[in-house]
Picture 1 (spheres, rainbow, N blue to C red):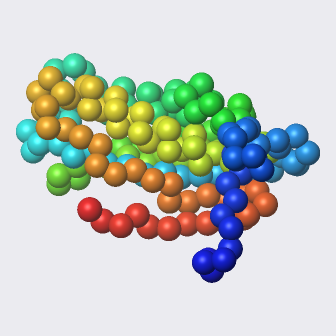
Picture 2 (cartoon, rainbow, N blue to C red):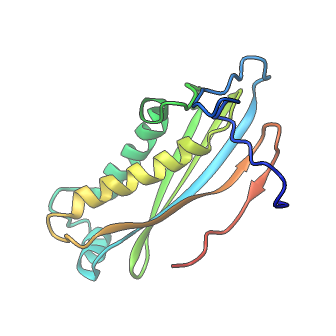
Length: 165
């Protein structure tokens, strides 16, 4: 972007005030977004997650369900997000050497995208996982999260890789 180009944010009106973007005239289309995140954990907790011996129970299942529920609650958390139909939501967790990788994909057939729903799903799943293990591993933390792909809508398909920490 050239230095002389003005950045225009859709949620800011000409007076600089926050507003909800009006999508009334847009045609519903199939849209999808994927976000990823990570929860860093101690080796002991990663082993307990693998063995299913986390004291609070099935932490991965709780995180998965929390993420799916969160995707549907996004407009309750983000005041300018549209209330759209979440027609599909998948949250997957994978135990790695030093973290739990989380990926959420959300789909809709609506007038606006689901990037924030996917990101909300990932971050709430991460928060639920931290909550499930914090009694044993106070060092567990969410270390990165971001949208990595979207499809559908006026702007079409987009993807990227998040930089490694």
